[in-house]
Length: 325
Image (cartoon, rainbow, N blue to C red; front, top):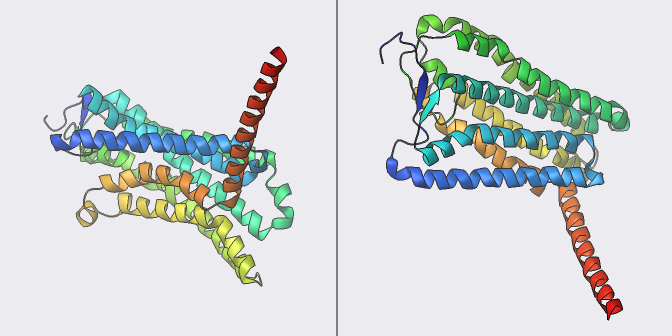
């Protein structure tokens, strides 16, 4: 297509250009997607069913599980659809809708993780006031703010994107509807407002404010942990927030490599996009379950009750059969 020509659809290149790799990629993506859904749904179901997990920490973890499933669905469904249908064309309107949903969900994940860091700060630094500060009503308000704000903050940017009609090409070298590859094909004179919003409001919401709040929380957390006299107490306190700290470190590292390091230094950014949107969603339920004694105990408790109920059901059936005889 010619420069300045409007487009009605975009052509997505996907994860790989090699036709021989399409089938293996499809199988791998499908397996990863199913594991993400099963892992996060299992964790969410366990949190809902076990009363011992009805605490602020697991309330936000349940929200994070929902976000991970949404993020993975938005990013991977395009790859699966392209393989099944053989059509790699995405209508212009569809691309912008998926772009809006993706950016909103990524902002939501960052905000939920920030709320979780505040929860860990209160639990470790203000333990005596924890129940009062992190009451169920406060948790609901924090979660509601995260959900509402994340879906509202991107409206100005997507409104500007809807008005753009000048592109250098309609071919997008990516596997889902992301902002960076979209901005790369916009004509320079049409890019100014969108780039301004991305570098101001977008940067503040995605990185600066959440990152600053998270770092501040962990500065106070580390200071409080260092004041604990026994090594066992310090280890136990740090262990309660280690999974969250690992997830945040991986997330912000991926953000920096994906959005702020030039492509000529890190190469293709598809790998970082895949890690940021898919691999983290895959790791989250395992990081929070395998490294969490409460989750392990709750899982064993559920399995025990399931076995007990099954045993009781069998016994009741046997007694009923004997009575009939």
